[in-house]
Length: 274
Image 1 (cartoon, rainbow, N blue to C red):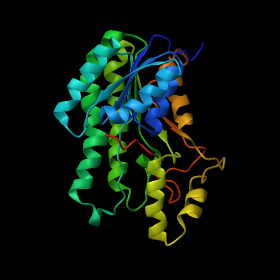
Image 2 (cartoon, rainbow, N blue to C red):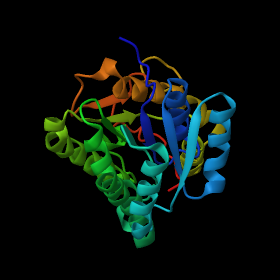
Image 3 (cartoon, one colour):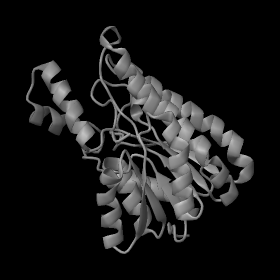
Image 4 (cartoon, helix red, strand yellow):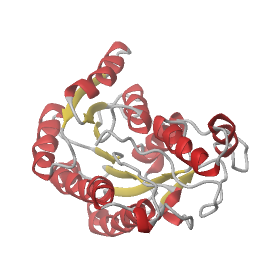
């Protein structure tokens, strides 16, 4: 069996850059018609243009995911422009690292609203179209190995990713009877702007050079490799394709052999364009 997604229709949130953009481009290469969600058309347009320049099919789907009332219309417009929906990837997310005593309510709300509430509302809005697609449809959540982090400062982010995984498992039980597969991908550190920004903060806290800390920590896995966005995209293609037809309710880790919960390797990216 092939990983072809020919004729499939997919909505990817937070697809204006990073992991979301890589997934959208990979889906398009495999023949899918993709809706690129970003906070604005301007953020989505470069990815739409790149996909179309390569011979693929893409449309923009703009909304600020922290605006709850904007989510359902965005999903409805994407479904209408695609002519249906077979694949949903909840990728959009934000990350703030602060100890509990220093976590301000705005940062808390930003992570909870984007990482959890928005994923729930996008899924809810897309559910009729996903169910109408029938057996073989797929819902994928981009979680994080930070769900298992035991490190100071990661508490709120880890909580949201744990919640996302729990939601995934329950949704899988709800949709299994329809033949819809539901899974999550948990990246480790992935080479993105979010990872770079996070490492600048980590390096400053430790009083070390950013370049050295980034180079060492990004490869703090068993393979000693730098994980790039295309590795996450490859897993998403596999899960959404016929090759992943029997994978259901699983948290699949892509991190080069990291050790979740260690001080060296908390979260991944998760496109900050909510």
